[in-house]
Length: 115
Image (cartoon, rainbow, N blue to C red; front, side, top):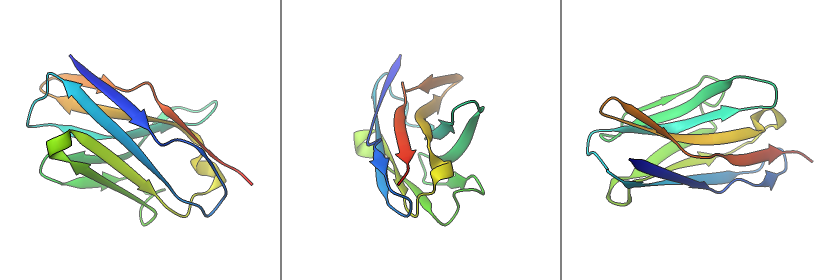
């Protein structure tokens, strides 16, 4: 089993920045992918960004140029730096980790972008 704990969600004004963190613990595999999904009220959960253990990254078109995903492999932690936040970025952000044939999820952290 793998446990994921997210942090960093908050209320921020449009144009502001936040950094989310997600720490993994438990039965950790070296080869893995971590990343973030988000779910806005009344909408489906959508992919935001992913990063492999080798550093290969992918982003949703809606966040390219504004969000940056990174990781610290020694700490089994992934980060999401979010800049130029927009009201439409408001959502619960979920961390995930894929290793082997299993997907693991955090409980989510709420990001609210509002003036």
